[in-house]
Length: 368
Ligand code: NAI
Ligand code: MG
Image 1: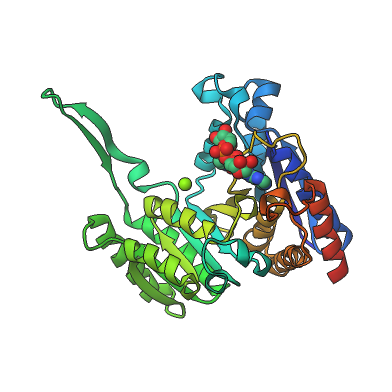
Image 2: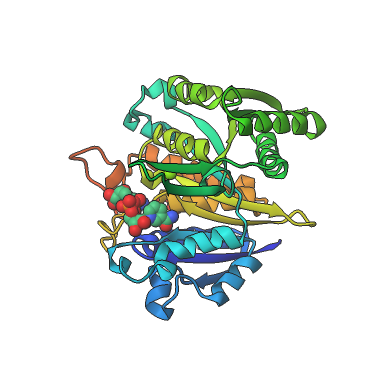
């Protein structure tokens, strides 16, 4: 059996608390003979600053580059508010994204049946929802030049942001979306605004050509991003994989993820380009931050973190069936009524971070 090199970067705040539960799942997977890991652990964010005065060390960056996947907890908090821009905790996360060239951000919106009642939408609209937003992460209007504020001298100022996309950037993100769709329900919805933006015209053209050239087996539809936002709230189950640019993806992925409940439930992945052997740099992390308000209390929900490990198994380690088992175990625990505080209805008892991790492992054990 292949041994997978994982780098665990727990970070600070609740990061180390939820990472403990990932380690519990990893230990179980090894014991059950379902996967074999070579685990390294490093420091990032506040933890790296407290130890070495940096946001991530060069040694840990080298480990990240050498790993099959980085599993990242969370970073940030008031304790490090004044440490300086280059060494602040968030700088470690940005460095990893930039140096590993993680251009594809995958945000699933998955609604566990037991939590459908907790959505702000009607349960039947979200129950069983399983869509995947693929957001371009390293280009577009967040990075395009010129990016300026100019004083016009007449009491007015002018702000300029520039949306820039080259063919290769659109092609590589669309290819990721098509490949992922093949492992799911085989449908891609590409969202842009070609009616008012030149970058949208090119986006649509490049996606259409790539589809014709290499992915004709996948169903492709194009949708204007604003209309997609409406449809996501009206009937989200019509989608499988949605691919879109950095700005639209930022907004649509936040919208889609909140269809399904607490931030403590949401995993994510960031992927880089495949090398000649087909191997991609990749990092998996919960969508939530370091939650300084609850850190140290042992009450954080570890499901987003454990779900991020499942995504790593599915998208980087070739272990989709093991990922399915983890998600099934999470669903079983939720079906049994077990809730951490963030997903427990008011007035009902909640379990701790460690109890939730142990319950998921027990469910894995029961299903094994
Ligand atoms: P946050 O996600 O840390 O917390 C928002 C709210 O959700 C808080 O009330 C928190 O207690 C709750 N929450 C978050 N994760 C939870 C979990 N697993 N279980 C139960 N409740 C949970 O976002 P916030 O408060 O805006 O940021 C806190 C710090 O985290 C900041 O320094 C921010 O920069 C950083 N941050 C880091 C991210 C990362 O490491 N990728 C992402 C977002 C924020
Ligand atoms: Mg956002």
